[in-house]
Structures are given as C-alpha cells and as structure tokens.
Image 1 (cartoon, rainbow, N blue to C red):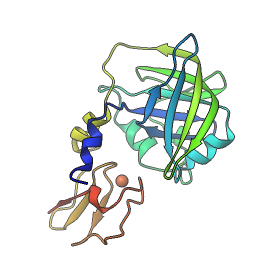
Image 2 (image 1 turned 30 degrees about the vertical axis):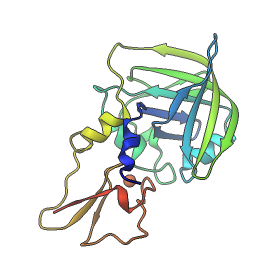
Image 3 (image 1 turned 60 degrees about the vertical axis):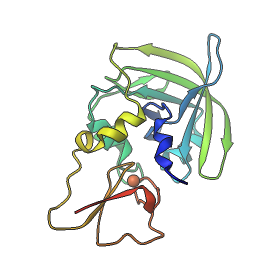
Image 4 (image 1 turned 30 degrees about the horizontal axis):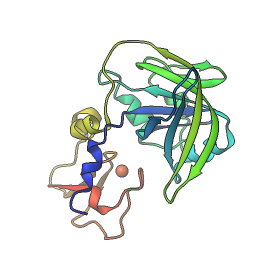
Length: 201
Ligand code: FE
C-alpha cells in the first residue's frame, strides 16, 4: 500500500463506547438507518476486552467526544485495558447510569442503544444497535479521528526521553525504545503493526 494513512481522511469521529463492565475509545461509528429509532454500527477490535463484554451485554452507549473535551478521557478509555484497570473508577469524568448503561458525562452528547446484531470480520466485530435514548448536551465541535491523528502529540502530551531512539505509535501514542523495531512488532496497546510507528531521536 502506498500510504495507509489515507484511511485517516475518512471522517470518523471519536467516541467512548461503554457498556456494563467495559469501555473503550472507538472511531468507526456509523448511522445505518433512519426513522425514530435508527440503527448505528460500531466496529470494535476483537483483541479488546470491551469486545468480549459487548458480546455478553445487550445494551451499550456512545459518548460523542469533542475538540474541547478533556483529553484525559482518551488516555483513560483509549490507552489502557479494563483487564488491568476499572476505567469507570479512574474516569476523569463522572459516570451516569442511563437506561441501565454507564454513560460518560461532560461530552457533546450520547446515544444509548439496544444491540440487535453482530457481524464478525477478520479483526473487528461490528455491533449494530438501535438507538433507544439520545441527548445533545452542548454545541461544541466533535473531534474527528483525523484531527486526533494530526494533534495527537499535544493532546496526549507524548514525550520521549532525550538521548534515546524512540518509536511512537501513531494511533495511540505508545512509546517503544530501541534502535530498531522488530519486523513482526505490534503495538501492545492498540495492536497496529510496525508501519504505524514513527521514529523519534
Ligand atoms: Fe498503539
């Protein structure tokens, strides 16, 4: 592929996906039907703990992340696993139970959905939900995944130690130290391969 980063120009947003017992950041969210209770799909990596939990739960929520929302939310929900930490306990924003689902407070708005279908592909599960509740909480601008990619260093305050060769994951900000990345290296946080790492010296 000439430049896989063309995919960042697809206008995905940034969302916290939450359900009872799991939560993570997602970008591949899409409304796929209309009407009073439209269908929305969300793709979740199979290796994510939240994917496992989503298979068991029948409701989930999507909180819409904005450009002026707290970037600590990305670290809390995007860069660690519920296998290791209870993200709801460490959440910088409060959690509110809505329709029996934990929803992150203080974002632009949220959707609560009832799961109606799942489709498996090689790396992700597509969860399809019907919107049963929604609210818009403020008028600020949603963050696109492309914006996040372009501003990741400042948003995540990615800092590398001086005097060491570092490789920074362009998806999640994980830093690997070493002269060379092994060819089969995959990011321990988000699972992308070597081609998504940028060298910093
Ligand atoms: Fe990563």
